[in-house]
Structures are given as structure tokens and as C-alpha cells.
Length: 231
View 1 (tube, rainbow, N blue to C red):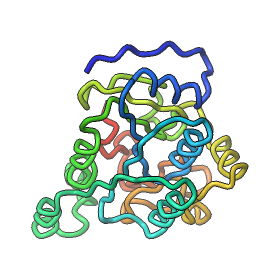
View 2: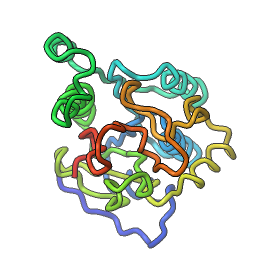
View 3: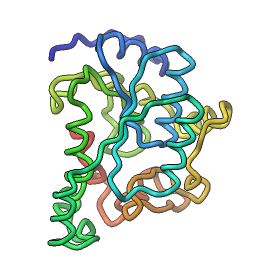
């Protein structure tokens, strides 16, 4: 699928990026929603701007209860339809029977295996039939995301468009938007969490640590991606 990337002015707003990306995709576009502050903000931006945006979520089987609460609140507030995708149960059963419940902490390869089963493979199914997908990634989040582009061709997923409307937002800007618009917010943020994924792989961060320090905290910073956003 070949897409022409739209030209955006320097400092384009989230609304402008999202609008241009959806228009360029010219077909089905869906938000990959983890119910983070970023994703909730994008849902609100799309809703208030009258943009058509589908939403899908990956239920890895190890999400926090608080994450499901946000999903329920969003459905109630915006009357959303969320397309849920789950890992293949046979793969999960084989993994846990042969490697145990916490093999992902033993090595980077084993963690990638777990993420591959629980996230990457379901993502490949979620993206089928789409012309574009939207993420809540921000450059400020970690060193692995410093080269983000507002709109790019995702060569690893069939050449569909990948749209990152919040790439230049600061954490302060994100929190301010969330509070100003009284958006649903995961309760774990008030407990020191700044990036929330699977429960066993996420914890609160310490003062001065970056936003993703609580993700896979036993690994080096340059390894802290699950495979959903390979570059």
C-alpha cells in the first residue's frame, strides 16, 4: 500500500496532524489504545474535532484492573466501540507450561518472546484491513522514541500510515489537557506510575526518572520497547 505523506507546517498541532493523517490514509484508520493519558487525549481530540477514528485494544491477559476501568469509562463517556484483540491461547498456554509465569524477567530474548505472543502477533491481526493507525507515542518519553515523525509509512506493517499526533507534547502539556477536559485517568498515575503496560512489567517511578523507567526496569533504557513500534 503506497501512501503520499502530507506536508505539515513546523509546529503542527495534534488536531492538524491527526486530520492530515486520516485524510492521507483515505480509508480506515484506528487508534492503538492502551488507555494511557496520551490515548485518552487523542480520543477526546478526535471526538471534539469530529474526526472518524476507530479504536482497538490489545488485551494481553496481564493488564491492571485500573486499565479496564478507564476503558469502561471511555465507552460510557464517548459511546465508543472498542475492538479487543487477544493473544492466541495455544501460544500463551505453551509459553507458561514450558517457561513458567515470569520467564520474561530472565533475558531480553525471553521478554521479547512474551511480548511477541501477547502483543505483536495480536497487533498484526488488528492492523489488517487498515490504511493507517494512530499511536500516543511522544518523543519525550524515552531515548527509543527521539526520532519519531508526525506521519510516517509503516514499512513493517504493510506500508500503512502511522500517525503520532502527540509526538511533540510534553508530559506537563498532556497532564494539563487531561485535567482541563476532565478526562478519564488511570488511578495508577496518582501512585507514581508514568507509563502503564502489563502489570508484572510496570511499576511506579522514582523522582527524577524518565517516564518509562518503570517499564521493564531490569533492562537497559535502549531495550525498552515491546516490539509494537519497531523501527
